Image (cartoon, protein in one colour):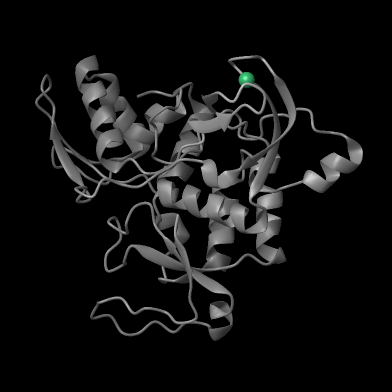
Length: 296
Ligand SMILES: [Zn+2]
């Protein structure tokens, strides 16, 4: 991912009046490319200006858990996002998760965990994984934003959009009340219109989906993943074994250290063993569903 040091802010080509930018925010700020190429946002280019994280921002990372994940992420992005003036909740899940990974990498570029090589079973108890190796999926150039899908069996017409932070909040809410898989809920939350009807709640959409022929359901979820897919893919990270040299694809363990590094503490106390899964098993890989073990 390219990041250019910049002291100046490039103006976007828009007729909007100039945004007032806090000059203090511009100190130590850099341009960061968006994995969405800015396609989902009106009048926004393909990058944002981010301030390098200060201690205040890192506190949000240090206290992330499955329950506060989206709200902590939004608060942190509010602090760090200099330009454009966009509500972090309206950013796509893929961009949000990428900016989270970017922020984490500015604090420390490595992630410390134990792993056993699937080829030679070498137990690597102190592996330092370079986070820049996490594959980041950039959205397809041809993606034009919302797309309409006509379902073969039910003949319904469905408009699909991008999953945003707001949608993720809804998914979290419904997920705690039902047994639905998160990945299905995320796909359904991307539905913007059903046969011309908009403004539907996630529950409304789920009810409608329940009566769909299974083939149509797969068409919706498949189309959504195909056309909106972008974000870090934590489930498909290359790992080179230091013993046998073979490369395998691994899912990074979701531990608190993935969001905030605690290497010095681990070294001091020898506590490098796997800790609990903070993410509650949720897939935090943004819209990049490929290679994950979720629904596809
Ligand atoms: Zn090996």
